[in-house]
Image 1 (cartoon, rainbow, N blue to C red):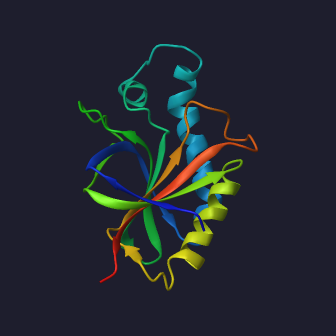
Image 2 (cartoon, rainbow, N blue to C red):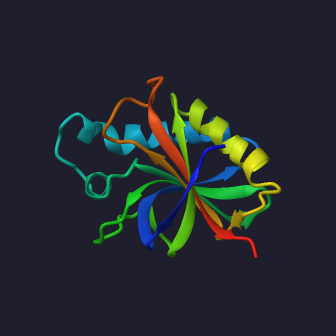
Image 3 (cartoon, helix red, strand yellow):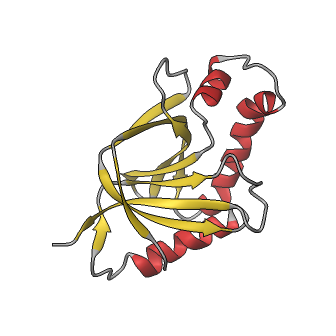
Length: 171
């Protein structure tokens, strides 16, 4: 698999959080995105001014640029955030902030319609790339899905997204 290792400074994300089961996440996470869009994004996507603190946070922090998986629950469950880069300020009720420390990241580009293309790359990372990788292993308990919020539509055959994994060199 093609990837690049990129150092990243610490950064924070803000977003809407929900707990998912590993077994049903591929089916349920796209539904969560749709729920968030219907509830908070469609008004501002239509060109209207934000009408509540969550809509304002969505605009101020580009919520929807990231999907963040945080594996800190156990029992086959994890937290998932529909998120954006946190720019500071109030955190509206119903939203959370998560901070990533400085780290090296393995970045896997993904080309194709969402969610299928991204889910396919994700499966390959965890079934092919990580197991037995001679150079890198995960560090931390979270990873990021990046979505191009400027170019193209998520259903386009050439849509660009990526998966970012914090990694460290094996000793």
